[in-house]
Length: 318
Image 1: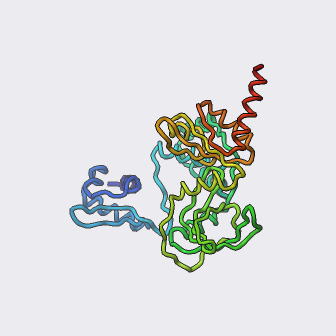
Image 2: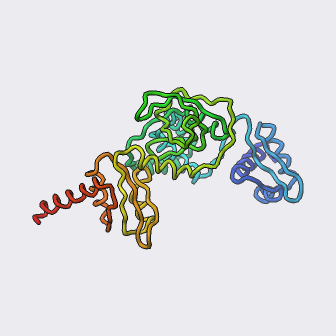
Image 3: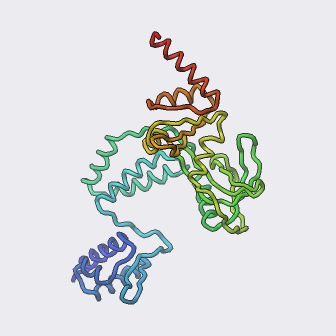
């Protein structure tokens, strides 16, 4: 067998190992059309090139590609290459500082080696697609890494936080999870000084550092639900509660999670909670849902809905 044929087979073996977590020697031999002995030799060649291929002996054993000291080259099939290229183009306008440059660099590398037929497909998809998104708040990528590691390792984090009512107080927290809403990033954490769960916007953090103080993870609320409650209600002057005659999943499809929270109510109804600083704005958006609704409060939103009704009646000549 020629060196070229062996190289092609080794690359195919690498692609198979990247496709799923574990393979038996017999499965790999069948995929490659070789013997188990050839598979063992090819695995040894990959290891010599620096790929950490782990082997588990026994009847249920097999081969698995592990994590190494460097990120190995990824072998992508046609569908994976197209999906990766399209995702990188979308990521070039994201909310993580520096991610757009990294995405463009990666896209340039992929575009350089991509076959012309796939390159044409990617450009066709990109040329036929526009994105309708509101501008997001950019956060530092290093901050994301710091907080992610602190969540993973259960260590306290200290940072300066410029909240709505402060100009940069030092906060010490026990982080649990980060939640992205599409426009902003939030951290749910136990505030050590306030002895309670708190939600923090990442773009308001400064000089965040992970300490060496490890903590025992405590029982906590669902991070997504907790952040959503904070985002929907806490920052706003008015919090409207509206009963809607519709299935909850249907209303969730109409109301972004960063705008309102939808809970199941009695049969055929659901409960929408949404915050805002202007009761007129809240009333207008509730009316714009084109569903049967019952505004439960607060009084300011009820009065705004009544004023909106009278104004529309005058416009209609009633």
